[in-house]
Image (cartoon, rainbow, N blue to C red):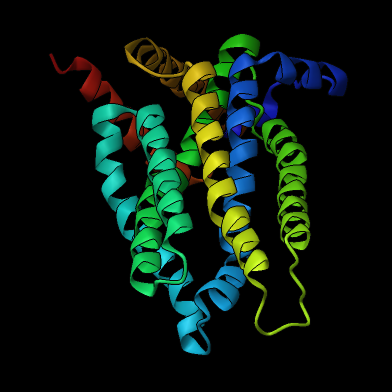
Length: 280
């Protein structure tokens, strides 16, 4: 949206206030805080589970994380079609709950490799829609903000999101390390005591499942950008964007600041839009 560069922006204080007043942003961040905590542990602390619970070495030690990401990639593609049928919010929540279920099964799988791999496949299935839909959910929050302020404020929301998610990552790592230390984990030992192994299972699997469940509850209870009403509002917002873009490009044409290639692309886009509008 090039036209947004020409619009007068909000002042720093007012911008922060308007962002915090956006209830959909607060709902998104409540969800995202717990999601970041869980995802941080699953991706960053799996080495503890692989090395000390399942006791895999060499290439086999990297197999679990490879499986998770491959399954996640495949189901990201499948989730795209489900979103069109059921919407972002519902599929995202389902993904969180599937991952939670997989982690709970993982907690009870112990060191049985077959069950561990099956559990991680389930976790990867849930990760597919979760990682596909995260950005569109935030985009909807930004669109909703535009209906309140009349401004496009992607950079503000990106910055505010980072302020919240960075502490979530640090807190997740701190809790995990404190937990396993409390259960007797000793990083100088190749084979950990049973209590430390249980602590790793608890922190990596069960506690992470709880984080995902809390994330799903936050989105389900508080996030309302879903359904036909929101779809119609987004369609109207899209028409407003198109009109602003037209006005901006026409201004550039009058000032002679637009390239011939861009003029050609704009003309073709405009003709296509007019044809679509005239189609009964």
